[in-house]
Image 1 (cartoon, rainbow, N blue to C red):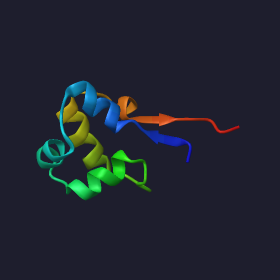
Image 2: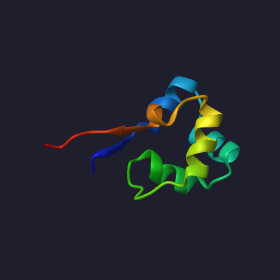
Image 3: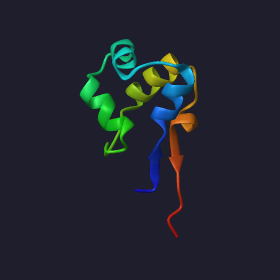
Length: 69
């Protein structure tokens, strides 16, 4: 998939655990884990907004497009 999720990188930079972020954002640990491991097929803008707010970052810090040509 050409969209790479760099959530783990941002979490490491902010020194926040998966459990703590899930609690702050209001989603389950399993759903956040799916996103973190790049297995998600989609993400709601409201979820992306909440993650960005908690990590004090921009969507581009989390999502990356990789051209596979």
